[in-house]
Length: 91
Image (cartoon, rainbow, N blue to C red; front, side):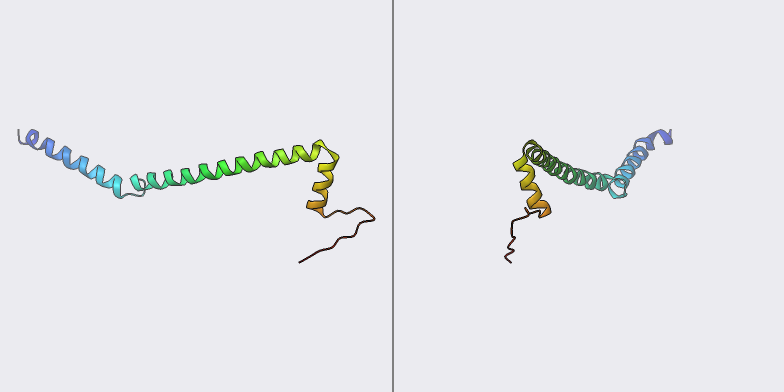
């Protein structure tokens, strides 16, 4: 009879202990919030990289589609010049 009377109190204290532990522990709510913030940052970075990949693909398509685009890229990226050209570098 005495045990049945204290059962709700014991259950309440156990539940309170579980909640307190989840709030304080490394695997608790703080960790979940930290992981959610990291996920948002990672998704932003993924979106930026995806946009960069799209731009790079378009640039590559432009370069490969015409001789003029290939020549422009060769000059800008590799510093290539024609045999009779002179390069002036201004700093």
